[in-house]
Image (tube, rainbow, N blue to C red; front, side, top):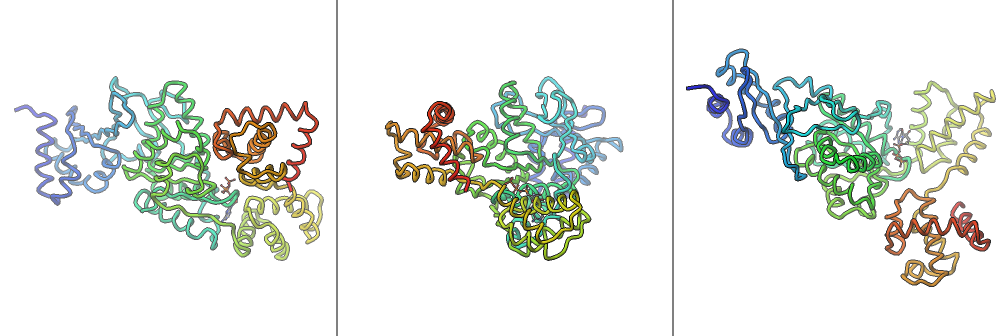
Length: 475
Ligand SMILES: Nc1ncnc2c1ncn2[C@@H]1O[C@H](COP(=O)(O)OP(=O)(O)OP(=O)(O)O)[C@@H](O)[C@H]1O
């Protein structure tokens, strides 16, 4: 009788069945399909990359023994990973990985077979069409746990981050959503988790990307008819970190594609880490099904650090930069800049720069001047709600009137001004602004912004409105 892939695999299974628990056999071996036998290499098809990893981690020895028994010392095992076909792709997407050769995965290289059946996998980060897909993690090694100082304000998020990096995909913190105000360390912490995972598990494919870049890549992929490649690229990531997910607000196409990628990763035990400037309950224009996914794991808030933590952050920064600074100056800066760690660091850097350029000693007086300038120059984040309040107060109407459907000219103008300032002073998308100011669409907001621009250059009275409200919002 001739030897076939099926006959070899059947014999292996018989041996394996006798040597492992029945439940484990059912879970991990029954779903496998023997595909082909060439040059003493048996190719087996497994349902996911997670499955492959599990086999390699727990059953590689027994697989080796059974296969050697059948095919001799030169026996080889090749996995074919059949990815779940979430996108109506006619052909299944496959990925081949040789057994116990995880070196190729270690360097974040994934070998994709180029045959007629499987589509070429295009990596949005690298020139398309190359055979060996190298995925740069895009992580910043300077953002580590070590230099992310702990305090009451960030203890939960930081500890959850450490738990995730010790066991990516293996904790209930999946996804881990880190949220908090501007400059409080969301990006830093997200990178630190990724960096630590790469240290502990070099074979894992980690990718950091901002939601903005993700959206751009998706738009490009749709333009170039590469939507499936885009999805497949993200589905082979082990740890996906997406920064500033609030950016997806109002972008339904990108949300939809992210929803499918998220489900695939989550189902396969991969880790997802997200950051956002607001808690899921406060996110506007994000589809309900996506919001509910965000809440599956843990949402951990980064709050404004207390005085002690601010002092430690400054001390640590100075220590790393090799700069000595009197304790009273550090405390002065920490006392006066409270709400944003980026500003805190910025002020101390200006102080060092000023003193070295002007050869001045660092004194409390110099610190006072710099902190004052610094605090004055930093723009305060205003919310869309606040803008609507300021505009409606200015025109002495209530917010409901401002948002109403009326076409009365002065109300329309007030609404257009609110939209114009929301665009100018917040990072919200046109769609999100529209939905918050009277449930209008993005085209209406765009039109409002153009109208305000036009009117302020042609109508003196209108220009005064713009100037007055700008002043009120800048105080
Ligand atoms: N606990 C901390 N320890 C040390 N440095 C910190 C800490 N928190 C924040 N920082 C530093 O503050 C700066 C701003 O942090 P980061 O860019 O991560 O903020 P963010 O919350 O992502 O801001 P944004 O909302 O603007 O995206 C960085 O230089 C970061 O290293």
